[in-house]
Amino acid sequence: MPLSPLSALSPLDGRYHKQLEPLRACFSEAALFRYRVAIEIRWLLALAVEPAIAEIEPFSKATNSALERIVETFSEENAAQVKAIEAETNHDVKAIEYWLKKRLAGNPEAVRVAEFVHFACTSEDINNLAYGLMLKEGRDRVLLPALDRVIEALGALAVKLADTAMLARTHGQPASPTTLGKELANVVHRLRRARRSAASVSLTGKMNGAVGNYNAHLAAYPDFDWERFARTFVESLGLEFNPYTIQIEPHDSLAEQFDAIARANTVLLDLDRDLWGYVSLGYFKQKAKTGEAGSSTMPHKVNPIDFENSEGNLGIANALLRHLSEKLPVSRWQRDLSDSTALRNIGVALGHSLLAWESCLKGLGKLEADPARMLEDLEANWEVLAEAVQTVMRRHGLPDPYEQLKALTRGKRVDREAMRAFIRGLALPDADKARLLELTPARYTGKASELARKV
Image (cartoon, rainbow, N blue to C red; front, side, top):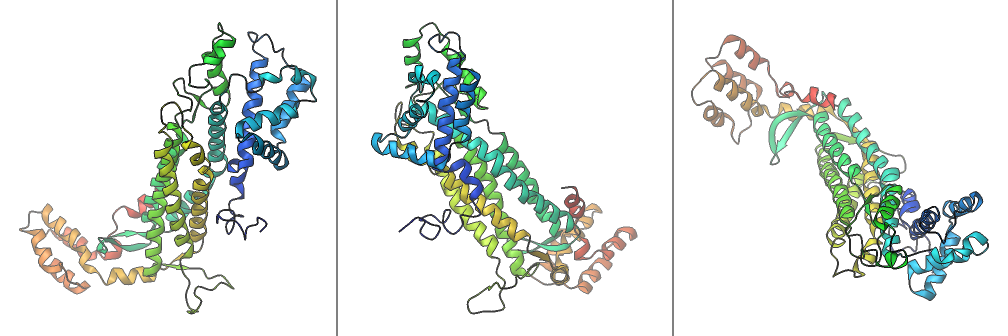
């Protein structure tokens, strides 16, 4: 069966392939090949301009440009050529080296120094830097902008609904009122913090040989400061230099990155479930789309499918992200290959994350608040003012305020008249009594509106 979205094993490349197109430029296997080629070429260019490596003369401007063009124009056809070589070598990074040497065969300057391609490198010198660049660019160019769109949409909705009073629920039971905007603002604040954490991770890299000690480097050039050179090279890629490694860069920064993204996902999972509940309560209606069916048998339904889709994908994403963050920093002695196949799933984990964020964003765009429905719930639960009344009673030293309100309200529905009758019978200063008599559940929202507007 030819590979197509309909025959793909993963829904990321099948059902959802269009939504995830931006990630393919960073996390596909062809993209990994391109990042590896970029590292090999830039290592060769760095060696060429180092006077201590006398066997390589600096390349001409034309050759420098030609080498850079190999990276810039690396195509799916080129990736297929690498894959064909890998079928013979059974080694993915060696295939890159051989492909690159063939590609340089027509350039006399490059041919003279062909053995400096992959010079003193172990595969992991190339791989760790390729994955570091992959994750850094994917994060900065695709993931963070997508998360920003969710935060922006949620923040706008929070401000719009800042004054829309609603009954809060703690333990699923009626509680002190809030506003719908403030509940959304809470999530905006959490997401911004999670976003800062994800954006601030400093991804690390190494270029120090087979077991991290520059053994081969010093065998060839014993008097050269390879650690300084490696540091300069890694930092030129925009990564943080790690001076202490085994054969692999230990992946601690990758784990930190995955954990940070998983935390953002957890916040969104919490939001998805709350919004699902508010739709169920009728606090939100959803805009119906012409032609859509909510149920195969119940024509009336408009289901919160976007939040459900988001929730499901967040669960898959976090299972993968947390596995990666726990697995990758663990290696048997100086090297084993169990990290190699795990690393190939970075794009899968982030693909499910991106899909979840886009589904949540789509769901947010369908929401329409129903203030009348929220007011109905507030008016049916006057007992939530018990907190306010007993707190004012405490201020003025009235006896047993909590116990009195508990006897009046616990496990009971209290209407407007019963609550006001109780307040009228209290020995409170006139101003405080008048203020309590003016209070309604819809007005008992504290600083919720102010806090929502400030988000």
